[in-house]
Every structure is written in C-alpha cells, then in structure tokens.
Image 1 (cartoon, helix red, strand yellow):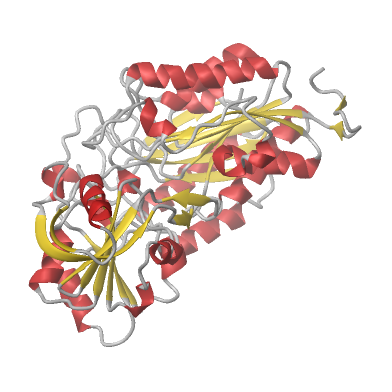
Image 2 (cartoon, helix red, strand yellow; image 1 turned 180 degrees about the horizontal axis):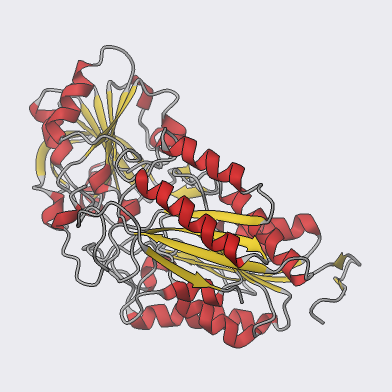
Length: 511
C-alpha cells in the first residue's frame, strides 16, 4: 500500500514507492532533421520489466539519477519509460503519442505510488503538441490524482509554461551550462517531494517571465556570479528552490523564452516578489551574459595567431545538441583556405562518407566528398583527397549530464592537407577529449580544434585549451535571432524587439 512500509524479497523495508520516467527532446522548430520513434530507439529505450534497473544504468539515462537516490534512501523505485532523442524537429504526432502511452502504461503498472519523479527537457514539441511536458503531466495527474507529489526536473534550456507549474508539485531545472549539476538537482527535487508527501512543507510557486532569447554561459562571469548569488538566496528563510529557466531560443511557440521560478514554504507573496526581483536581475544580464561571437574569418585568424597550445573553436551554429545537422563546412573550408596545417574538426555527421571510408579501409587514400549535405545551413560539400587514418565501431564519450558512456556510432578519422576530420554516423556533439581519443585523434597535439558544440565541451576542454573562441558561422544555430522565421512566439521579446524591462508575471499554485 502506498505510504506504508513495503518489504522486498530479501527483507529490506522500503520507506516510499517512487515512480520515475525520462522522456526528453530539445525541439528545434527550424531544424531540417525529422524526429520519429526511431530517433529515440537508436539511442536506446528502457521500459518497466525489461530487466533489473541496476544492470541497465546507462539505458536508464535521466531516470538513473532518481533510481540511484531511491536506492541510497532505501526506497522502492519503479523505473518507467526512459528515452531521449538528439535535438531536431518536432516529433511525429503518432510517435510522440506512442512514447506517451508507454510512459503512462508503465505508471499504471506501478500501481499505488507515493511520488512521481519525471525528467524531461522542457522544450519538447510534437506535431499537434507545443508543450509535451504539460501534456504528459496532465495525463500523469489523471492517473495518480492530486495528492501524490509530482516532481519535474528540466534542462535549463526549458521554456516554462503556467500549465507545467499548475500540474506539477515542483518544477526545477539544472543551474549550470554546461549541465554538470543534474545529480545535485535530482537529489534536491527528490527531497522536496518526500517532504511534501510527509506534509512537512506547503509549496507556493512564483513565476516571472523574462522576455528574452539567448545562450547564457554559467561557467564565466557575469553569469557565474549570478548563479552563485541565486544559490546563496536559496538559503534564505522560507525559500525552497530557485530556478533560472534560460529558455530555448529555437522554439517557436508562445511561451518560448526565459523565466524565474521561486518556490517557498507557504508564502505566496515571497514567491511572487522574489521571482520578480530575480527576473529583473536576470533580464539585465541579457547582453553581458552571453559570449563574444567571432565570424568564421575572425575565429580562424585568432586561432592561427596563437603561438602555444591548442585553441578550441566552438562551431556553435552547427551544434547537433541544438538541432543542427553537424555537417556544415564553413570552418573546414576556412581552415583549408588559410593553410592551417595542424588542425582537427569533430564531429562531422556524414554517414555516407563513413560508409565509404570503412569500405576503403585504414591506410587507404581516396577522394572523398565531406559534409554540406542536409540543408542550406550546411554549406557546400568539400571535396578532398584523404587518407583514412583510423576506423572505429566502438568509440564512446562520457555524457555531460551523468558521465555515462555515449556511443558515437561508427567513426572515421580522415586527414587531408594537415587537417584531420572525425566523421561519424550518429549525431553527437563533443563532450570530452576522451571521445576524440577513442576515435583515433590526439587532440592536444593540434594547434586548432574545431568542435561542433555550443558550450557543453567547455567543462572538459577549458583547462587544457590555450584559448576558446566562440564562432558564429552561418549555420542553423547562428546568433541572429531576427532572421529566424518565428510565427508563434509572443512579442515583444528581446532581441527581436527593443525592450528594456520584463513586465509579464504569472502565478501558479503547486498541486
């Protein structure tokens, strides 16, 4: 019975019965990459009953964070659907509804539960569903009722909606970009839900919307200082949680953008006031909180001018972690044009080129057409005479969120004119130098490393890099928001509009 002492077959008493599930997709409304059921299945799907969760930790993905905490506490954990896909277009309607039905079926099979803990992205869209998180929360509430605490953990690039806040007991997100703190946030959310279940707190939620679009990097000032300030304010009397929702700038729906969630213990006025205050502070950082962006030519010039160590150029606009194809050639062409003779590029998603390289074999020399295949944001293909340096079928890298091994698919390291290129057939951004090494590259011997990532690489590259340059090439995720064909987004919003003050505040009481 939910809420009572539950004893397993070896006589261990469980305090509570937890259901956890993970369904995540960062949806880029403008991406050329379609999203269907296969997009999730190729990265692995776990469901209740597939096997002991502790034997499939990597497959649990986000659910593993809650499962591990349940085991630490001595709670019973039922792990439901755990699935995610690389960022891309809105999911096909029928496929989203299939995934949703799997999650809900697993919840029903769990029967009486004390707490539901969901890990989603916060910007998932599907055909006919602009807010998948709220849709699933509503279905979960229909099953468990209003008394069961439901916690929702999000990526900080979430677009928070009033429906999420109304249907979940708690909505929180990671605080760091790169996202290195999910484990801490999962433990905090778990604890809040337990305290609510035990009737030790009465959460009240304040939400203030910051009408702005951008990428705010928390590893460097001023955002580093601001996040530290927020974490200190979480210790103020009456405050349970403070979340900065950065928003996802490539979501085209009415609630896209940033915001601040403040959860207090039975003090609505404090929640509302504090959310509004922090929102104004966050909005004031909208320009200074983002990295300086270099053009392709500027980025390569700055890298070539460096005399010692490896310079990392972040190819932000072609980051597959934001929905880009990861096959653009703008920086590759510039490196070749400028005669950069000790450079590397990773990872270029080009399954056809990988297939040809594998057919040729290691050591082969052959003409190869690379990249530039998916859309106008990919640029033109580059034709090179290459040497196949290394072929791998088992290259992995630790994921930024949980450190679990993540497959890169088949990789082909090819070399031409002093530039080495890692081709692969599974879209992945570089999280760690370990992945480059696994593909056969010696990254720190290079003068220039071009990484198709916006910022997640930073956590594992910044200590050794001589310099980091953020490049705004003309790819899908380029920094010019005014060129994106938004149709649904609520206006005014910065930088599409010249506004100087956030003025939209919403309220939602915890369920």
